[in-house]
Image (tube, rainbow, N blue to C red; front, side, top):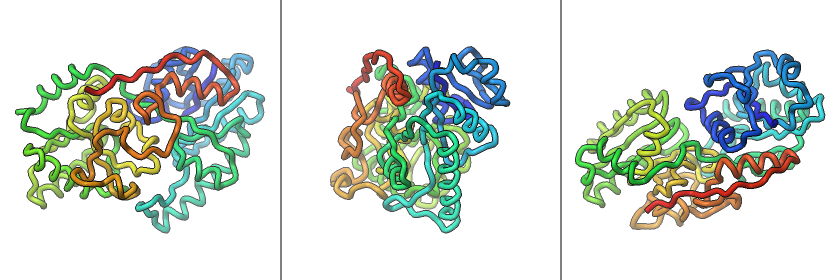
Length: 363
């Protein structure tokens, strides 16, 4: 059995946890090792506040490999002990970097304080990698891969996958029609995930949304899906009110995966705050890509030629984005959970047959 190691396994409340949840569905020979879990403990979800107890309970001979899921802001005592423990074994390991240190990307600058924090993050990275001595270092996109190789480490690609199971497009359209009054006169856009307003030019995205709705002679409806968005929603509403724009903001709060799937199928477009260089890290963006949903994006960090008229900020299709990666299958940018699980095993030096991966086209 291989274990994905992550401090706080919280499906529904954390993007990395949601990715792991999909991988467990795709790979019956995989499990999660964590310090805390919001999901019930089972033979495949192992919760061990003391890492020594894990090895005593499972046994080294029953562990084929481990994939450490690393975020730049999470280096806790449990993680350090876990890295040190695995580093003393001969068990194959992959250091899977979901977010490295903060870095200035085209159009996105970092403050002096963030630059100081960046130095600490790099120091932590070197220390943990030196302690673990992983079989492979991997990350989710080529920008992060370049950042890591610049530090002198070889780095492979292990992509994220969409975390919302793909359902019926017809059911999605029926659902959205029941949730939005006079659906035929509405231009409905959906955002998914945490809206960190400090990191992207959301005001311009709202302006483009208003213009696009006006061009279509429809009213704009923005549906914001995700947890703990109250402050962001309040800021957006205040901005819209100050501009005297007519936008209906709907904030349903926490909803089921099925409801998110319905919204994504039934919407006219999506909104993403992720820069072009790292779009593959966003599970929300990938969920839109799986359904071939047009997406509004921040202009910063994207090639200028993709904002050609008549739709200066709206992509006709996600596949039409200029590609800077080559591991996507199916919808172009998205790898299925089965593909990610197989690639993780290959990076560990393990193999298993590759199941077919199919994506549902958007009509």
